[in-house]
Image 1 (cartoon, helix red, strand yellow):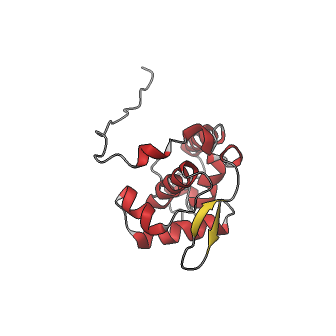
Image 2: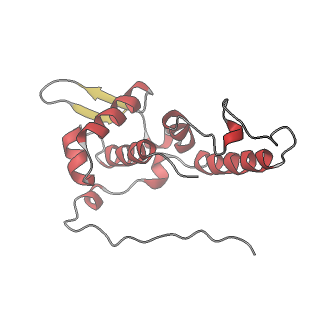
Image 3: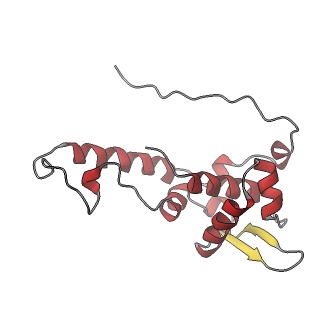
Length: 153
């Protein structure tokens, strides 16, 4: 499963807002920190505000901040609010045209895997993944480390 860029940005926005404590942060500042589009972030911040995860302050000195404590922001709930399509395969969609759907055993496995994926996020809150504010102000990006999943043999 691959999360949408929207969900990725939503988690990053929440992490940055959490690191800022009670300070208002702006979309411009957040876009600069992450090196991503302000237009995309505006949509994400608006969505997180409507969902109740952020509190927006309009005006010249406005910005956004967490609407609650990091310990109260469940990551599974955030994914459910930001992911619009958990249809891993065609048979999960209303437009399913697969000829073996009525007899196939794969949907049960896909559903079990999806449930486990989201349940993993349900076990964590924003507080569990927060970074100190200085982690966002380092001058050079860290070296990318790929985390390759391990599968039982």
